[in-house]
Amino acid sequence: MSNPYLIQGPALISFSGGRTSAYMLYQIIQAHGGTLPDDVIVAFANTGKEREETLRFVHECGSRWGVKINWVEWRRGKPIYEEVGFNSASREGEPFAALIEWKQRLPNSFERWCTEFLKVKIMFALVEDKLGLKPGQFVETIGLRDDEGVRILRGMEAAERHGGRVAYPLAKAKVTKKDIWRFWLGDNIDPKNPIHPLPQGFDLGLHPWEGNCTLCFQKGKGIRKRIIRDNPREPAWWIHQEVSQNGWFDKRDLVAELVEQIRANPSFFDADDDMEYDVECGSHCGLEYAA
Picture 1 (cartoon, rainbow, N blue to C red):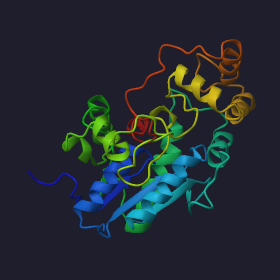
Picture 2 (picture 1 turned 135 degrees about the vertical axis):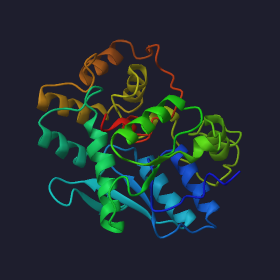
Picture 3 (picture 1 turned 180 degrees about the vertical axis):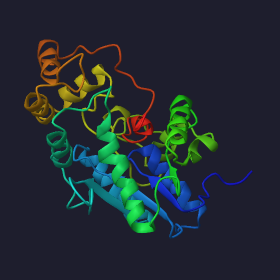
């Protein structure tokens, strides 16, 4: 069987900044003998609402593995992105807030254009600028595992509808969430308090539900409440956006209402606390960006 991690360029490796896509990137680098072909581009799109741990993790992956990771952020006008780095990356939600101000409304589970603009469009624009290629002329390589079958099918359908080309090497290699956890954390149970040596010498240091875009409306209500309880300053940005647009990210609950629910019952969480996959923005909702 051919090595699923041998990527035939031209290709874009979509790096969300989570453990799963980082594992995929590592395996692709190894399959190519430690150096990626010139027509394979790695991109990380920063919304400005990623966790600091995510930014450090992306930077460390690039440094340790000797691979060029292109950091990009959305900008209004042309070009629609700016290349940044670990030190210059936005950390107060600036690209996301600017997009909301331009759109004059909020994204939500029915209109997920935040991923379309903040992730997909700018990575595609990067490939066009660096390789002179448009969607359909390169393969978008995405870190979805074998145990994420429904999302893979949706991604393939979306790509087919819009003339794109996608590849899922992790699914082809039959990789599951347990494999990812073992690669990064070994015998450790708590990623924030490892008691055994880390197999790779470093890790993301976040629980799966804490993955990028801090209070993404795609995360379950219980997860968002847990994040708010653990990070009391986090809701302020999200509340400001809802107030400024007189709208909501999730029609079931305003972020301010979630805060009040936690104040009333700080130890109570909803039934959807658990998630079966890492919330890696651009790796699941992004697949349906143009659906």
